[in-house]
Image (cartoon, rainbow, N blue to C red; front, side):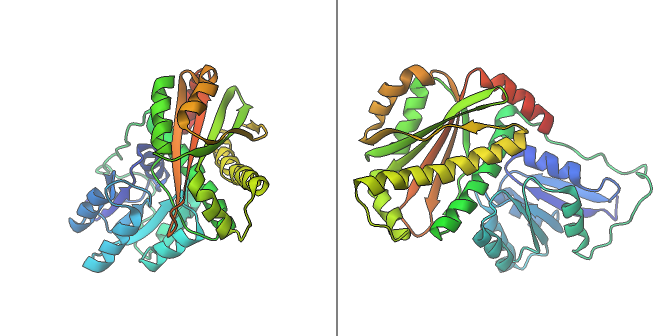
Length: 333
């Protein structure tokens, strides 16, 4: 259609793009383009395919903040609505400062999306029916790994928002890694999380709705005193452990709650256990190898901006949980 409005959906998750396209008012004449990272999205905007841009923040190649900055610096014509799982107040402030006209939380509410689009002031004819030359909207295919990564991304963002408020810092968020791992592969993943430092690790089991697993939160010992400094806390052996347990409750609890809400289940979370303190990853593996075997692993690293502090959260779902998770995810995708 000649009068179709070019709209770009820029998000690395095929599930997020599919959900957004589905939620666009079906009668509106839109020429939809998809981009799976910030660089491709910027190219599409430069070529005139992004009069309206629905933009994610956490993406490979070029994140959403950088895309907004380049749109501004290059004087590109694009009305940007950020739709993100990173719901920290600082993320919202930065996005709007860089030129975003609206900020919506993932998963997006269709009515809020329509209201944000109407607020742009563009002409969206209220067509009674789909005209003959209205091109069908192409929906991306979504596999389980990508879909579950998007769920983890949203849950991760909620945990970061809470942690950021507690510590009064901005949390830099990664793209979660989602993989089915054998115990040997899990050992390699944990070794990567450790690096060359000694670590302390807190484990919390969870179960509900036919799904079970363990959340493993890994702290580099050298960083705990820095966190205590942010909280103006004095450190001794007792307070060190209390701080670990408090941080685990915040990060793990918020992330699991975010997953539970999206999956429509209720997860009961066990008491946090100190798996190891001032020890190496090999020792953690040796102590827990019989329990972990093959697992669905979700790896998330939280980094505190302007501080050399990082927490590694690894959610380990039992092998028996995977079919149930797949059925749940299929209903969402």
